[in-house]
Image: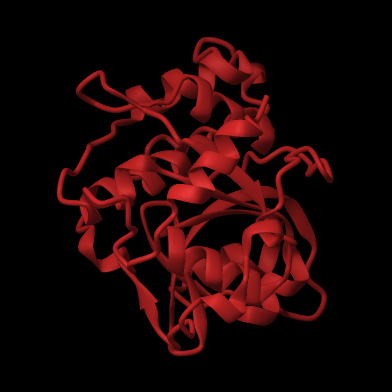
Amino acid sequence: MKLGKLAARPNAVTLKFSTYLNTTALPPIPAEFGHEHSVTTWGMLGNDSVGDCVFAGAAHETLLWTTTAGHPASFTDISVLSDYSAVTGYNADNPDSDQGTDVQAAASYRRRVGVLDAAGNRHKVAAYLALEPGNVEELCAATYLFGAVGVGLQFPDTAMAQFDNQEPWTVRRGAKIEGGHYVPVVGRRNGAIDVITWGRVQSMSESFYRKYADEAVVYLSPEYLTGNGLTPEGLNIVQLRADLTAVAQL
């Protein structure tokens, strides 16, 4: 399995989720939520052998949004690696070119160009906003409202062993950081956070997120909306979309 998220750049994503989050105007966030089990096959999307986790995550997020909305897209290693190459210069003939991805650069590409699916279609996000890394309340609110949040982790060696053993990611004493990793957060179950990585659903504890998250981005996907402009959870985001259009990300 490969990592591949470059070091976080604080404030690289200028719009903040907290600016638009009014918890008093929202219904309570359920103790359990998520649509991750609507997807039957996630796929590795190259991340078992290439450090394309940021773009594998983008494809997984798009797969979740389109499946939940009833028009599932599909992705392959080839389609995902083409976007990874376009942004980072990765060349399969040169292993040294596999250097990972800057999350903000990928988010900008997703808004301007869109990620490529297996049928040759592009899937754009309308906007993206930064969350406070490690803030569980923000993370759960954003995931519940928008379906997925892209999270950057400083990935400890103990987490790889836990993944191999199909155990939740928890904080372990003496862990050493192996590099940066990107995962889509897609739900909350049994007091833990569900993410997608390396082709499957993986659970992580809230304390693991607080300790190891160094960036988090929520995306506004038009493909996640119903015909009347609501998310599947019923949030009306017409005004939010207007505000974000007026302050476009670069």
